[in-house]
Image (tube, rainbow, N blue to C red; front, side):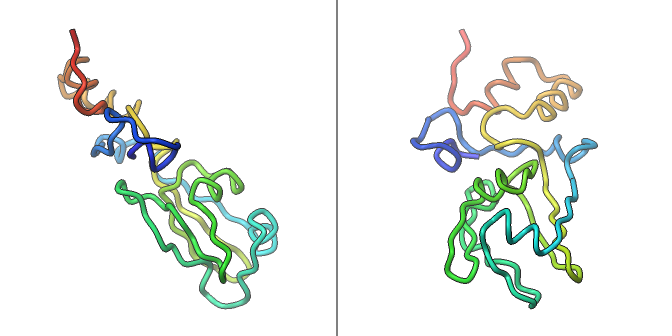
Length: 142
């Protein structure tokens, strides 16, 4: 993620980069289930009885959820992550009867170095300089 997608202000070396090594970890995909009642209470929204839960209106450059519209009430992906205690803001949801099933990808805010990605790069023979330069755009190591 770009730093400004999660915190105020852009930091030049904290840019969104790919981290394909994360996908092979045991913690990459995680499902969490809430009753509709609990979901509504935690977020302070009403979603009604239809299939629509909330409309994701903005995504970050890294494709994480930035903004969701719940019948006129706008929540940030960060707020939703916090209020629902999700692993990340890279999520999708679906309604299954009286429950909401949320699937998250990854773990954490997504800014900076991925521990799993760094480990994957090291396993492929990359050295610390390669790893740091991959995750921290434009840095010089002296």
